[in-house]
View 1 (tube, rainbow, N blue to C red):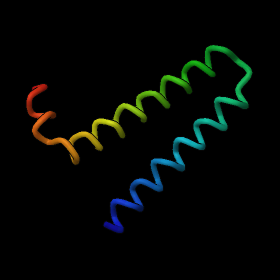
View 2 (spheres, helix red, strand yellow):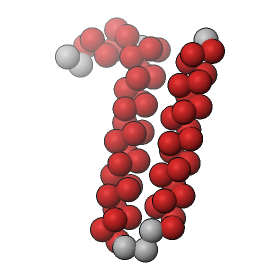
View 3 (cartoon, rainbow, N blue to C red):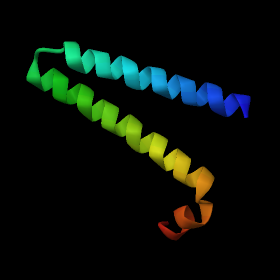
View 4 (cartoon, rainbow, N blue to C red):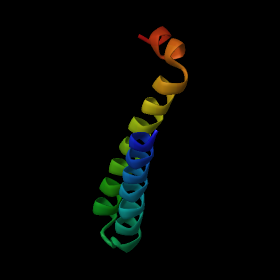
Length: 62
């Protein structure tokens, strides 16, 4: 349980760090690259949660 919470905390810190970088960035291309990076992080986190909570559904997609 504690390991999961620490992992979750690390993911949240990464998301906040990326959000701050996105807000501070003035170059539109760099801002979009940061948004894309954040989206990939969200996707990975979502897939991880889905695999833990709905393992049968994840196997159906393969």
